[in-house]
Image (tube, rainbow, N blue to C red; front, side, top):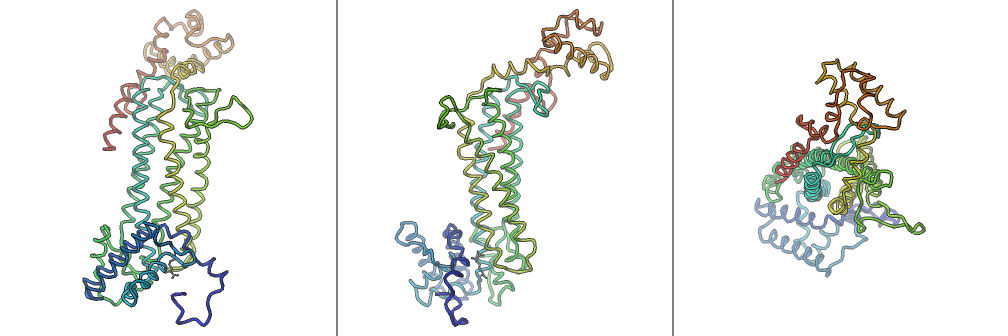
Length: 457
Ligand code: ARG
């Protein structure tokens, strides 16, 4: 039976019903819906808008419904239009006329605006906890491999020596910003919309601050149209999720590369790898690939939300019912990705020797060779750069590295070279020397990790 049966002469066509309904998506907000209704009922009672006894019975009734849903004694009716209708209907079934008083001074429009906020608030807090865990694992791994020399890349070409710990800490920094974005998202979401009514507020003397306090909001919305009209907090959540997924996707792309035979910088634990149905030798990084792949659907959720909102006149429009499927998919996907990623990183084996070997090829100390001529021999950097370029070309022609090229050959290209160059281009020296704040020197990396672990507390 529809809420609006007084106005209508016919029942809805079943095809319309299914299309119009949102119960399959919003039933996950059952607890938040009940929590919101309990606060609303309490406020109505304390303000004398309904009598205290009825307010109490309503709250008892709502509590009973939640208990029965949790225990399985009550199933959510899949034919109900949405969770708000279902709960109110069930309450009325149990309490009769008293149940019908719950919706005084309230609309499903401000109710849904509240429920989604309550739900996303919890989801965001959960995600932040997972992101913190991930950052902690990155820091621990970084501390362990603070001195593991590896090639740093630009254009996927070996560029300059860094350490594996430094590389991991770059992701820790990105994830810290993701945490900050979720914090900001929560700050702007921290606004209680009940009292906005359908769009124009209400004539009942509500104590909106009381409802806000009961529900743990620090503010109430200041414009009734805005209170029910915007879903910016959904889009913002989806954006925070999207950017975090970009970071995870890049990390996973690197994990995929690193565990290939072409790199072999890491080995994923068997528990986080998969095999092939035909190739017996295969060990595939499916989890990392799936995380990379799932980023796409999250960006789709964000695009869907922005596009859904952009042409809507104020206030509520049914288009907005589409908000939940998109934003819940975004938060669920990130949660699903973080869940295996954290232990996968924790358990991976880091093959330091392979990284060191890769670092020894590719002339990643060429800049340091040029810097030697600048610092020790007073050459202008541009000249030193050109000389080193000639040395690299010579090495490539002869199948040598800067470490194995004889000093006589150095001297042929530039008479200023002496034995000291070999110390200057030692990879360990190269990373140890990069002590500038933010640089990859092992002591820096340890300090960075310590600092970040401290921030997490
Ligand atoms: N199921 C609806 C939604 O998710 C609840 C609000 C319904 N309001 C309305 N005026 N039809 O958006």
